[in-house]
Image 1: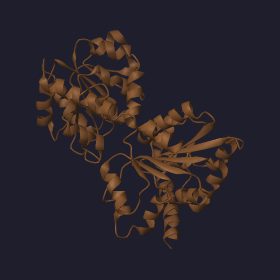
Image 2: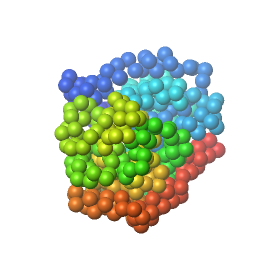
Image 3: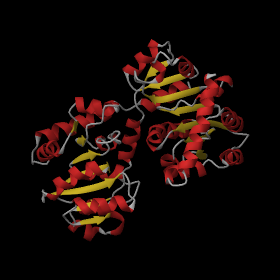
Length: 410
């Protein structure tokens, strides 16, 4: 009965997304991207090759799984890789990712779609990233005796697995060959429900950001803009973040602002411009000479933020006045103090960095202003110690990728 209800729920969910697709662009991409996806996979998969299937919900999870994929390429070149995404925000950005042999949407998790997908791909190994628990797929992998793993996983007491009514969902966890978790809390929670095949290995994103920093691109326009100035880099900002940032920026003529909004559609950019009272330029519409004269540089394209952070004195990470903050490690790897809004509790690395005084939550403009003034003061002890703490934190937590690969392919 539970399985029947689950499959029915999947169909209802897909129908709801299809209805929303008539006016919602993301829902439209979700539906169109899945049209004919099983036929596409069947055409691309080489039946004479061995495949590792890696699944990520969206772009953030992909970045966690990317070190695994690239280490696999290096250490186990005999395997090909199928990479699937649930969300358009992951697939649309990484659909041309060269590290995988096949990149596509994951078909909706019904019994028929899951079995058809597994028939076509016939993976030798399956790896899920962080939060993905698609029951028909995972149970199907177990039934076929295909080794199945979840990496960089985090578990919390409020998840269904740990509720009195979660017995059927708990069975899914027992289908994994091994679970690699980020923290001790996750390890203890799983142990409390009898899941013992677990290792505390940490978060593969530390390896990813370290690799990004080592390969970071020189950005002449950003370098010209930042040269000799006090610079705040604001990454993945939302309107409530921008209210604070722009207010502070407008009143501090000695400070420059690099603003990389989370969304770069025209209406959001227009909203940002309505808040700015000092000269600005757009990254993809300027040159070095113009950028050097501007006070605000707006990054109106994707793919640069991880290289932009190193040009700032401190970073502000957006999303903390909404559902939660974005990637803090991309800034921390450069030894940058980090500020963000109050909704950070679901993010282990943010909690850790706040405890280590490498990051600082702010609840309003006055708190942001006090911290920003301190960090931007010449010889700031807060800046020095927070920078060192951020660098140490990233360095100490590297190495999860190697541990996971060694366990899977021992």
